[in-house]
Length: 488
Image (cartoon, rainbow, N blue to C red; front, side, top):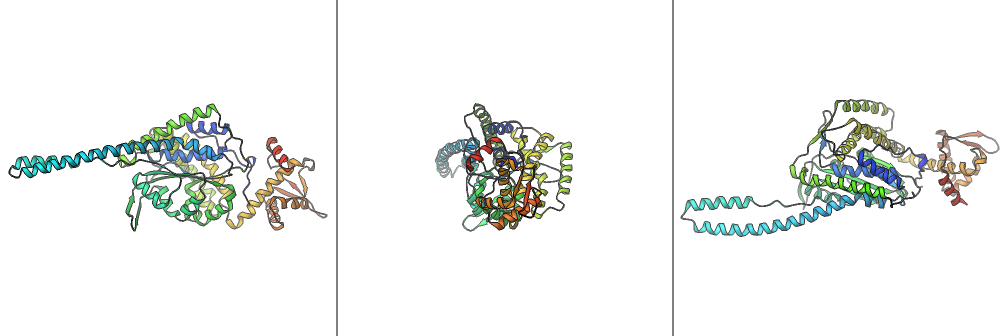
């Protein structure tokens, strides 16, 4: 069964992204894009734009990389292709420009090497003629050494964006340039055949810890400080398949905690791309991204061999200490997967705050405002994870069925308001066959909604009657009208 989520059944995505990131989120939201999609994509791309610029320092921990990777589940008609195209444009433009610059530099290097070769031949010929002149020969030897030392370095194009690659290809790419991002709006195959088979290796690359590999035919490759951002999206219709893969690999290995999760509503948004303010904001966004990437290309780790660090104020560290204590209390009694994910909430918060600070080109330290904004964002994604990803797979079918039955009851409450939210169970059970239920799945979903107090038995005997909790949110008239039209 597909996962169906209606916007009214979800908490609103927090509108707390700072500065230009907040402007971009608001502009896309005004044009009809789901903020649950735009927000996480912006967070992932902010990581890609800033992860090579600096590391952050917190407490006694070693320097860590800024930003968080994201996984998003969406319907096929969510507008993700347009969103990706617009937000990725400055990254792809930068990659093209850097590739052209590298190509031009390679031509100059080749010309220089040809001239250098001719000069070396001329010097060696002069040295052969100066056997009887030690002083002249010594001068020529010094000139030869200077000529050899004058060899220009080979220029490598940063090329930070990938859509798909094997772990071997990714390692080679990071060996050429220490920062990369894998961005995909159709990530099913990548999740299954790449991350699913090598979770431990992706964890090392995402954490930025030293990575060494020695494979036959490729030799030894050492990455002292790699930086990797993942922005992955797959379709809702693959939800249960994704959950199976997720539980068998990512959850067991700890890969979960390196991601922010988002699940989009199942309804198709009404999207408009003809918005003057959106175009103006995207121009500012493009200039900012390209400036950050240019800064990385000129003075990043590949050039300097190190990254500067940014710290945080005492009041910020105090806030994080209180947050860590609160999270530790929340972990008590939680299932294993939920407890593990909760344990890294503070770390995710700091990472997002660091990317906020670097994207906004803040100098010196991560502010308390950045951390408080980041915590609200990460709290939203924490709630998404706890609701949809921390449930053991063996229990998930019942959970998904309960959510679908809840959604259908929500529709029935609107369409049959004369019943005052009271329905005969046998009637709903018969209708549920049209919603994809058999009798056993209906009964399990019905029982789960009773346990959750979403519904309550109000009469027994000649057929059970039940009452649908008024806590179900009211259906927007425009959406309800659309559903009613579909059912006629």
